[in-house]
Amino acid sequence: MPTVKNRAGPKKRSIVYREALDKVINSFFMSDWCTSDQIAYEANKHISNHWTQLSTYSVCAILRTYEKDNKISVKKKEKKYYRKNI
Image (cartoon, rainbow, N blue to C red; front, top):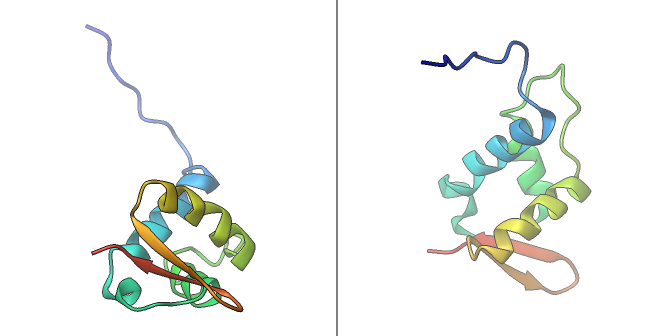
């Protein structure tokens, strides 16, 4: 029977960023409308200081996939505002 070996080393950057955004989206923080700046600030609390911190541009790019899956709503005015779907 083949055994599954654990991969040594840290997780990939994309996985770490998505996990941080998942924590923010599933928290009460996203119950109200917020900007990508606010989301990036909250998500960076879950990312080690040794890693490159999330920027607003990368947050917007990752949130597009959540928007396609109907996990979040987007409101466009002067800026884009995001909120999790209830």
